[in-house]
Length: 180
Image 1 (cartoon, rainbow, N blue to C red):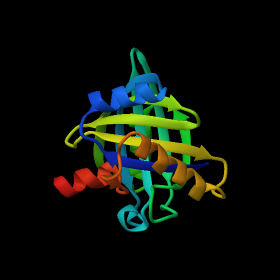
Image 2: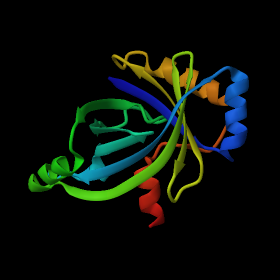
Image 3: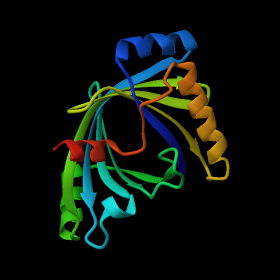
Image 4: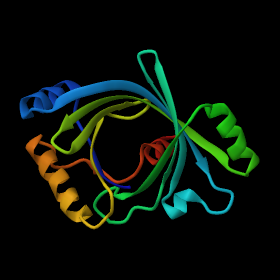
């Protein structure tokens, strides 16, 4: 799957929630996410622009755990890239396996994420520990053939929501690494 994703810093959540509601977006869920990022023993993911993480999500009493690999970005305007994800049952055992194979833990990124659905867009408002408020808009594609068209639609939606600057291509991990 190719994930076409653009994120931007926003002023606050309350104003953006109202704009999304006025647009007709539907609030679908709110969850806590903890992402544990790993670096490869073979290549430095910071240099290759890849990511490997274990994500634990918590919504009410439900907990889900996933391993996610994100490939290098494929354009210069967004965070469009291949994403492969698989559900697992035990994050601690998975982390131990990664470490036994030579992967090293980089950092945990913790956030509260509120999801919205609008047409074929998934929109999230992200409250990340240690960072300002952000909004991400993404479209998932089976292949990357139409990623430029999808990207343009995402930027158009940002514009409709009054966001015309503050776009960020770096990950939350990279933003936190710059600060600490």
